[in-house]
Image (cartoon, rainbow, N blue to C red; front, side, top):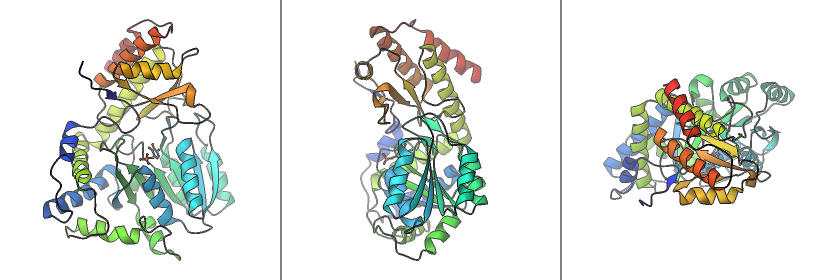
Length: 390
Ligand SMILES: *Cc1c(COP(=O)(O)O)cnc(C)c1O
């Protein structure tokens, strides 16, 4: 027994060994020339991954939630109208954050597994002059993916900022920030970016930066205020030493390593790999009789899958048996359905071998729990689908 559990949750994910080795290098000064170069280069590499040559990147210690908080704190002022497009748990979180900064929010909530129609969004934008709208690209609670492109276009049409929660999508799903006209695309390090938890990563458009500069009132959070961070990011990009809050040196060394790995594969190839693996994996799961939360393939994320437990199967027994077989997946997150579904992350370094391990362990677990399936069928379906798509 290798005692090496395969971590297949939607973040933290399995990290590349090279990234973990980078974490363990001796911590240098945050103003050492070598580290300044690494920080500056990471900011530049982010622009390539976000496809935002004109964007302003931010790398700040914190989680994905801090990235959401920063977007709200800097772009929103008291009584600004914000439209929240929600496909699950993280849409509601954005609504709570916007509320906290004094926004007047309207939330459009899709039923579980569905998306909000463009018609509904446009009606709402015609109705009121919104300052900003938020989109959850992939809601990690439901595995639902929204197409941000037409929504960003609507936002432009109605002169409204578009903010994309890309915590479960950046570096896994297709994003073209500049081309699509998204004003803010944010993420956390531990998901498809492939770095241990602890970094909030944001990319602001020129319009977003202008909106922040034109504020009438100061930013309500001292730590999140771009007045503090913008000069730091600028300094690192210009390879000058500077200080506001001590950067997490080891995490940023790991970030540069991961961003280089991502760009070595190339974003287009990477998105295609995520897509093919996700489709083959779901073909395998369907062979075990599993049903998914998203209502269609088009609305399904490539970075994770949310599936209902089969009828009569005890979810906690399934998760614990899987873990004993060294495969760790996540339970449900939506409070109303928490015990009726589970989630499997497949982003970042994910390979066909990882997913075959998950399908194999899941088949054995379901058979042990008395579910009527035939061993090997899901793996065969996975293999056929992958061979067909490659
Ligand atoms: C994980 C996640 C978050 C929150 O990120 P944390 O790093 O846990 O704070 C926000 N939005 C989405 C879509 C996520 O998947």
